[in-house]
Image (cartoon, protein in one colour):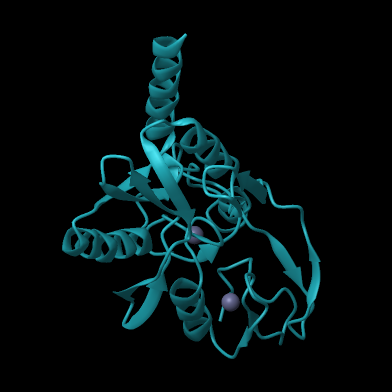
Amino acid sequence: MSRLFEDAGKTKGRKWQCFVCGKNHTDYEEYREHIVTEHAEGREYICCPAEGCGAPVRDLKVHYRAKHPNRPLPQGIQHRVAIWRDFKSDGSKKKTKKPKFRQGTFTSKKNGRDFIYRSGMEEEFFNLLEQDRDVAGYHAEPFKVPYFWQGKWHDYIPDLRIDYIDGSTEVWEVKPADQTHYEQNRAKWAAMTDHAHNMGWDFIVQTEVGLGKLRTKIKRQQVLTD
Ligand SMILES: [Zn+2]
Ligand SMILES: [Zn+2]
């Protein structure tokens, strides 16, 4: 069998090793299914869009160079995953490259507690929510919602729950626009939309567009008081 997928075993006889968690698999199908059901598309893997391929990979550019040298690399889509780890053949962690995304602790005066942010975008949303006078309080990763995807039940945890002074509530997912089209995200968000409607809330996927709008809103609030 010819190996089509550069992210799997590099030497002959080596098992199919998941590049996200290091778990070994005996055949390619099992390996592929493991990645697409257990891991997060866009954050941890990307599916090759080339016709007849569909391999989960970490770096599309490298994959195209090796496996589809005669096809042009598609533009306008994500080329590299956000999280990149390396594993020894026994599945133990070798090293973790510094992730490209920012992660840290945000101290919220409004809520009187700390929150973990998992991207620079999330951190910026925290900053703006802190200033937004319409917001009474907000919570990061507030609850779980079950969703069915690829034949199994999983849990989805949205990024934020926002409680407004007027008594309304919104649930937000913060996601760069180039990661919103993934099938797994759509399954999560469909389940969340149902849950929100049952609770009388709104569910919103906030991208760079929403961030820009919120920035403008805060500026306007500040001008009005000055
Ligand atoms: Zn894995
Ligand atoms: Zn491919």
